[in-house]
Image 1 (spheres, chains in turn orange, blue):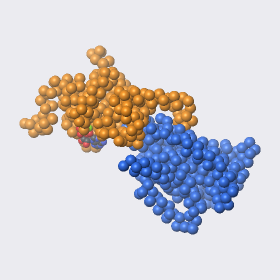
Image 2 (spheres, protein in one colour):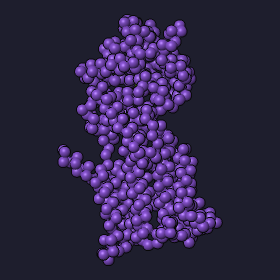
Image 3 (cartoon, chains in turn yellow, brown):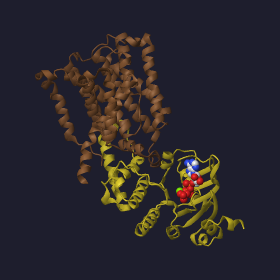
Image 4 (tube, helix red, strand yellow):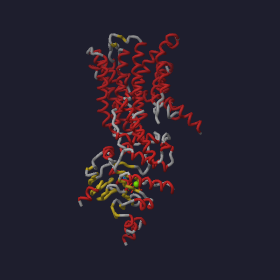
Length: 263
Length: 317
Ligand SMILES: Nc1ncnc2c1ncn2[C@@H]1O[C@H](COP(=O)(O)OP(=O)(O)OP(=O)(O)O)[C@@H](O)[C@H]1O
Ligand SMILES: [Mg+2]
């Protein structure tokens, strides 16, 4: 038991998220073990993105607690949570379209670098050195995700597949220990999907824990260590891929068989 | 990569330095150095406004108020209390930043139209205070007897001397702002412009940056106000009305908001238009400004500074 506790990086306790009359998350409880890829699956509108928003501080949960490395984070602001080491991507890619590929990743390096507004304005030598350091770090990340040759292109000009990858790169630049990826393979072709799976595995190999929302079941079954299934804001199943694949409740939820379930 | 090139900056600095000599030799433009003093003063405001609006994407319709705060703090403390103008200038900037924090903390939570309305209301309130607090501000008649500036016994008592003083400030501020834009702070501001959600998820303290850039723009406007008061030696509230805030917006829209050079170009053009080239329009002047804004937003959304970029894109096609 003690062993398991220290092994948990994220713990979600009785989380409720209500938007007016609609309850998007209902008494949700789960844990994520350090160093795994945990997938969250479920039909459209199940509450997956809402869960990410609650974990990363886009808005606080209506009720419940979230612990990251033992610290309660549900009341923190998004940038404070990012500072603790949780990073994310967005279902609808949210790149900084007014910047180059490199600059996007450099914004990711922002918070791990300190400099005052005045020091920046005077361009002190320390500022110049940090800028150089950020650039090198960003280039390293671009190499890791395979976009180094697109460095100076506008982020806006990339095809969707590369935009998604770039967003992952920006998230990695914050030096996270935990990343939430919201449908990284949506809209990608076969090759791109394979590359994305590979990238996520390599992120895990770096010791980063991954929480993955994804509709592409091949990706999910292929790379996850653990899967949680949401339906209408409730957890209906949780376990290793083989178990989930054969779980009748999961199959029903995915077939949209509400009637069958009632019968 | 956002790189602001050095060569145009050097050329521009040289032009500014030699311009008064040229003007001396050409009677037709003999009064231009005087106009350039005003253009420089407006540049100080538009540089801050460009960082706030063009880069960080936050609108302010209340910049005239900060301009006025600088002018009135300097005017009241020097003309009524005989304090050292440089110290008053600093006090003005501190006062403007305090007001900016008080106004900014609640308003910058708002977005788009709401932020515009909040800053608009702020500008109107300050304008009313300038008019009504007659005991301090002299009411609608304004304040006279504001002393000129001197430094270690050197009097800035001619147009040319004041021209160099103002443009010294403009260049200092311009360089400082260019450095900001090319730093991590500049990237954070541009990031906020596009997506607050992505910025904060990436660890950028969005509300802090919004306040910082708002305060910075307020400080620059206040500095401009102090320089204005000491140049004219008198001020009255009408300078700091809503129309002036809008004129500032027209300056950066015309020059181009997404490029810091736009702030300079816009301030120049509008200054010369309003003081020199639009005289014969008289009260119809405001219509001309409306037309400028209309034409710019429809045909030149990137402003004049965006024209090279537009041409480049055209050629690529
Ligand atoms: N900010 C919000 N305000 C109001 N309702 C919301 C908000 N965000 C999500 N919802 C609602 O909460 C429910 C869950 O939405 P969510 O986006 O979390 O689903 P999802 O599982 O990510 O679905 P998808 O697979 O389509 O991305 C939906 O009914 C949605 O309309
Ligand atoms: Mg979703």
